[in-house]
Image 1 (spheres, rainbow, N blue to C red):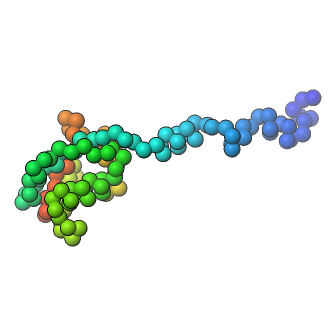
Image 2 (cartoon, helix red, strand yellow):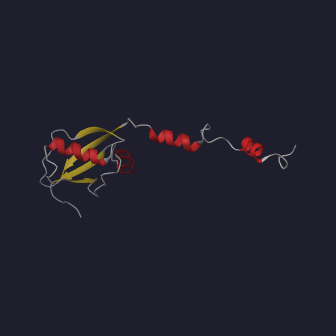
Length: 126
């Protein structure tokens, strides 16, 4: 019996994989993406302008964190309230979005194995 004369249910059941039971490359990619990245990134904080200088300026921060977590950590270390102005910059160049991941910023803008975060209490650059 050729596939031209076979019922459609037989043709499709033998040629198409069941999406509920088979794992394709897309499912594998999603599972890899869902895994938490436990790697750490060395972040170096540098004061700009009249901002207080931290006693310790190197910290290891989880790479999967959003930059918002870095901002909150910096506020806590400086003892600043949420209402106090805090401006952050990467490599004295730009202010990252709070939803950027530390891993992506590190991958693109690391210097000598560190992610340099400059901070100020006033706007230092446009």
